[in-house]
Image (cartoon, rainbow, N blue to C red; front, side, top):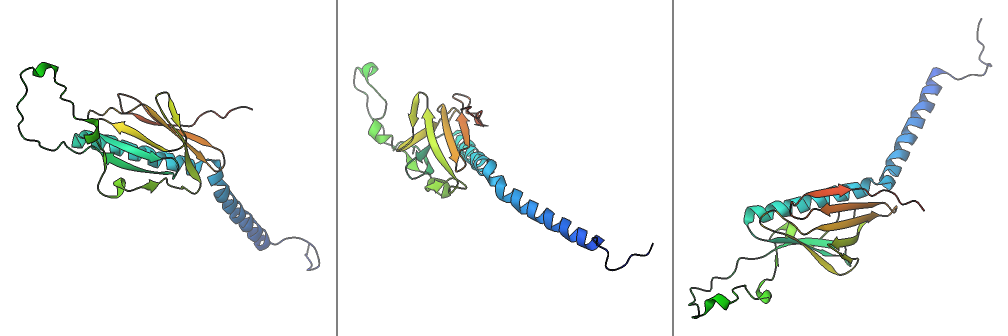
Length: 193
């Protein structure tokens, strides 16, 4: 059988070109949609968890209490530390020193920003698509204002949850376990409505 030019059909080259176009369009489409299914919030959560872990380790290695101060209104955070107490020299104790409160006054326990980049106010990764929705410390929930999460030199931390939300409505929880200092990233079950 001899094929004539006027018969309809596709050449192998035409089929390959169409297949290539379909693959390219599919690749671009899935890459664009991929961020809408939680990639940005997971990346921001992992980065935040890594920074919290760093602050925890910093508290242990420096022997100084550290804290992460979160400004929920501005959607930024920074790391602060408790400076060592000023050397006040040797003081003589009064005769009845057993009733003396030797704790430093609370006004002197002012945390100061850590030197370097971590002591500067920073936003989350992908801050244009992910925000800190809420911070929970024990029974207290905050959605605005300043909030601090403390890390002790023995590795313990305040029991806290940092809830993130992306522009697609997906939530992610970065949870700090009290006493152990363990930091977990958890995706809550979707609510059925």
